[in-house]
Image (cartoon, rainbow, N blue to C red; front, side, top):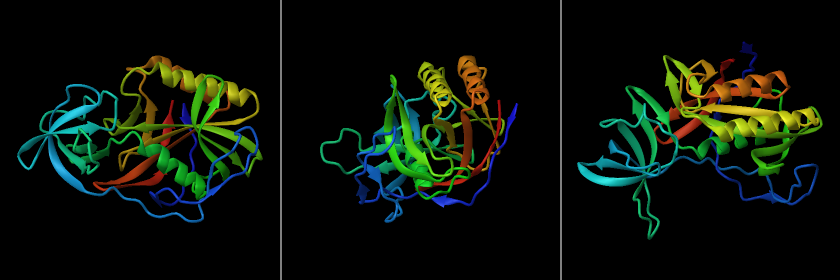
Length: 270
């Protein structure tokens, strides 16, 4: 099954603005809402190159920087086994916070010549910024709020879509897995992912707009598909969501060692 998609121009990743509105409105219960009138560009800073050595647990990795062994915080708790292999080139952010145990954060990794952003926290910022600047076709968002509870789930973004007049929930998924030129998600079984999908189906059935947004943190890819081999339950849930009115969106990115730019929509094959 192929899902239709829309196109738009590139968007540079921006930082958080300092202004906030304080309205309460609609189902999202807005008490702290982003104001996108004053937005400053934000890039990664203090970047250095290194070589991956090993990953003893989900949270840290040992790397070589200028020939010296160092420890880095891995900003992605996924398996990433196809990426973090001994000898892989990695891009690290040097951290200067006093008392921090890890002097580096692992941001990107090279898979051959392909640069992949591994920062699992960045997709929400990128997508929220795109919503705030009305860069996603079919959505004109206002009163954007993060981390909105619905039942016993907490969705990444809640907003009012001015085009439809409806409140909307959106779950954002960062994608770092590439197989044969195709982006796939997830890279490991995710019961939490299927749970969120089922709750989005419920929300759509109650009249809310519901979205699943896949941000592929890799440049140049054109096709996305759920990883049926690794997590067939998630793949089946995603198809059920689409058939129940949940909107699926997927965009690739322009990746540099010190930045990420949302680029263009990708074809989704369920």
